[in-house]
Every structure is written in C-alpha cells, then in structure tokens.
Image 1 (cartoon, rainbow, N blue to C red):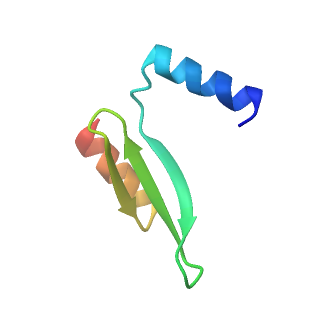
Image 2 (image 1 turned 120 degrees about the vertical axis):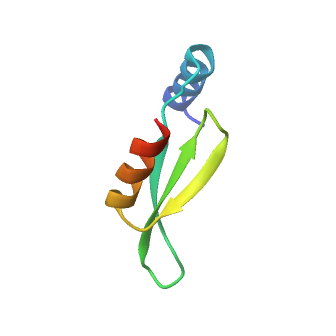
Length: 61
C-alpha cells in the first residue's frame, strides 16, 4: 500500500464515507458488470448496466 492509498483510507475512516462506490469488473468470459458497495447498509450489489445503477440509486438514496 502506498502513501496516497494510506491517506485516502485514513480520510475515509475519519469522514465516514456514506456514498456508494462503483467498481467495474469482468466475469470469466470477459463480460463487464458493475459492483456497487453501499457503506450505509454495508452491502454489495451487482448490475449489468449503468441504467440499473441509476434506478437503484433513485430508489435507495
């Protein structure tokens, strides 16, 4: 872990990041999908499109 990542992690723990975090991932066949971590609920959800993420955000935040 580099100094910048340590600083980011420290800042997040102090500030209490409440915003969902989106990560693009790929399955074994190379298809892309999105994982969204919601720190408020401590849950991870998977979506196949950005449109699905927007719908989820509208319903939950």
